Length: 181
Ligand SMILES: [Zn+2]
Image 1 (spheres, helix red, strand yellow):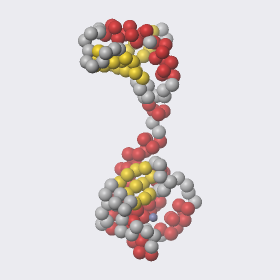
Image 2 (image 1 turned 180 degrees about the vertical axis):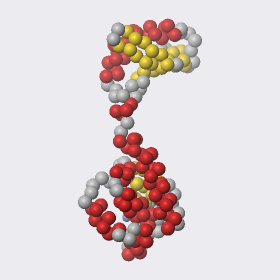
Image 3 (image 1 turned 120 degrees about the horizontal axis):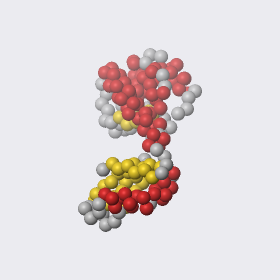
Image 4 (image 1 turned 45 degrees about the vertical axis):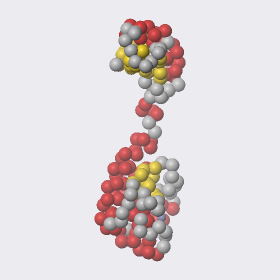
């Protein structure tokens, strides 16, 4: 139950939860800045909840100073992960029409220092920052990993496979060498 309370200049939105197993009133402050008051079921009236909040008023605002609002907390990765996934999955599908290789899972990563990788189990991993690259660079990384499904090395056969979809891959490889993730 969403509640609102205002005292002087400061106002507070909080969530009131009734919990039959709770023994006492409890205030918790989430990392998102959400204030939650849990109350033992039925024993207490809503008025009690409000009194409890008022009693803890300064403490609550002290705690809130330490948490950042949700928008700020949301990192770049969280913001772009799904956009990257949608775009990359589409490209994998598209280019795999040429290769028809079997792959297991596509994952979007942020920790890797590589733009893409392919595991021996056939999982394809891509760095989310790929979406900040040019289309041809994205295409190249997708094709590179798709070709690793067949050739888990950088042999002559591997590069011949890459060349099928990206004839000028050498120029793009050079562009990548100038960049860091
Ligand atoms: Zn490779």
